[in-house]
Length: 359
Ligand SMILES: NC(=O)c1ccc[n+]([C@@H]2O[C@H](COP(=O)([O-])OP(=O)(O)OC[C@H]3O[C@@H](n4cnc5c(N)ncnc54)[C@H](O)[C@@H]3O)[C@@H](O)[C@H]2O)c1
Image (cartoon, rainbow, N blue to C red; front, side, top):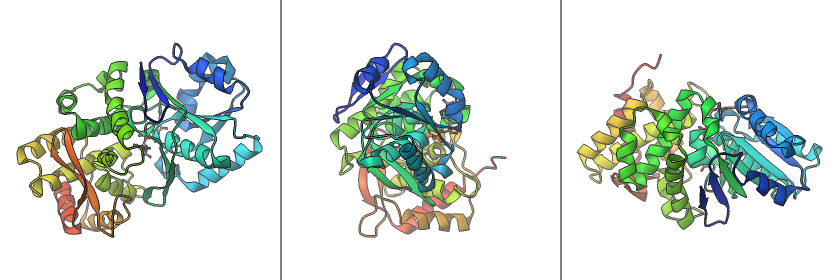
């Protein structure tokens, strides 16, 4: 199954073994050195399958990145750039990013900047990376507690998505990916929301058809606005508050990206309702589904103050005003909506009222 992006690269969903992966590499990169970026978990769970299935990868250099959001940082990039240089990697070589969103974001950034750009492809290994992070050409790293502050738009040469990698994923990572799937549905596809919101078992997401359907939403939005000048901003629904929560707790009690986005979607749906844009009953429906899957951790008033401060560094802000996406209905989202600090604080206090102990 293929999805063609307007940027010219292809996403192939299905078994890697029977996919066009082998031909793709051998036709384009037979004389190139190949570097495979992995993190600790994809090194243990995914790499062997890849290199034993494809002989031509036996000679590839493997670059082991430390796993986790706290390592999506410049210090790691410097080490990898030095290693690439030591290995003599040049502009005609290829980087394969084998991992979740941290590896695809950071590996894509490393490849894009090294020698002004080396080709890279993604083989996403988490649900979140399959349906979201690997798609759309945003590469980047964090700057302290500020998410994705450094980066470039650079598309991979191809994406190969094989559900086999989901087999070793921890259940909580399926839930994290589910958050972005629910977001795609909330901003664009009410029918998908109805299906996803009644799912009892997330293994139902691991079919090629479902991966294709969910990924296609992101592709379609990115195709119409590759550099996020307009409609692509709706993909950030839940991320204004979500990123601030993720960043604030990163060096305290980390909240995973997907979980943070889900909490952000509750807060931003609440703001949509309080502003009279979203019907109360619709807000309540959204909140119920999200709270069932994504419990709200303990949040205190000083935490709220810290989270609100981080909102001022969001990339979507304009002229010092915090902007976010708001829902009009399930399946319809508006972007560039200025929201006052006090309204965010109010939404976070509301979120705090839903806190449960996660221990
Ligand atoms: N560029 C974009 O458009 C975009 C969109 C959404 C999210 N993101 C970014 O993606 C990141 C989150 O991605 P994520 O949730 O995939 O996180 P992640 O990459 O940290 O992966 C989650 C965990 O799963 C492990 N893992 C990965 N694949 C595995 C496998 N097959 N088996 C066992 N363990 C495995 C990882 O080592 C990690 O511990 C964030 O940094 C976020 O900012 C980027």
